[in-house]
Image (cartoon, rainbow, N blue to C red; front, side, top):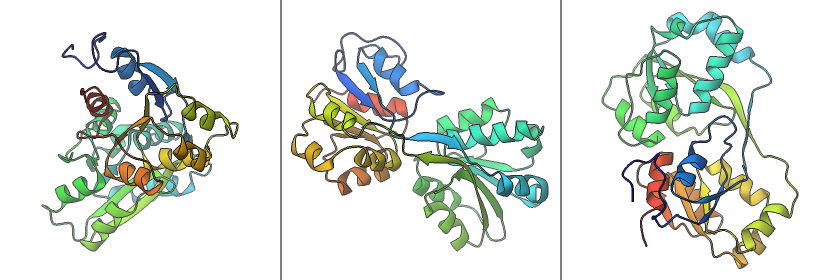
Length: 266
């Protein structure tokens, strides 16, 4: 097996395997590319549709009225960085207008997106999760600090609740929606139960929940023999809650870590 994650691998255990990718990859096809570099056959069927929020009123209010009084800007996903950058551009504001803020990111890929925008990141947790980021903040005095967290319209509340418990003020601003796409009701059920797939991959609880909404769970579980790979404990728990067995959970919560976990011989 080649040592580089981007090199083409014709000898590994994923070569010739059919893998369902449920993350949207129109603007960021990293997972599909990594899998194909390992010789896998990719079925791209996103169970999440990422769209910008319809109203930017809350975001614009923060930018126009709160920025000078903020201390931290926290990003929990690349999508948060992407849509924030797009809105700033629409407002004709440079990303450099945020340079006075300390920035924290949930993981290295999100931090890379910030750097691509021209920002710098002060805090990246060792463990790429809300719990990991909370643990990193636990080493600091947060009392009276003001945090801005642009993100999904329905975010996971763990991190914001932790920050508030430590005496910080948190402003959560939606910048994108995670919607369920429209697919024929039988499409995913037939695909998953056809025997054509070797792996299912999930990168978020939303992807899992929408997958269940887009299938007939009783039929899928009754005929289900496909290996399942996921990123992170919250995604794993969502799968378990719906009755799925999880084959591998990426020890490193990145797309490369997910593929590497799948590529380990059983």
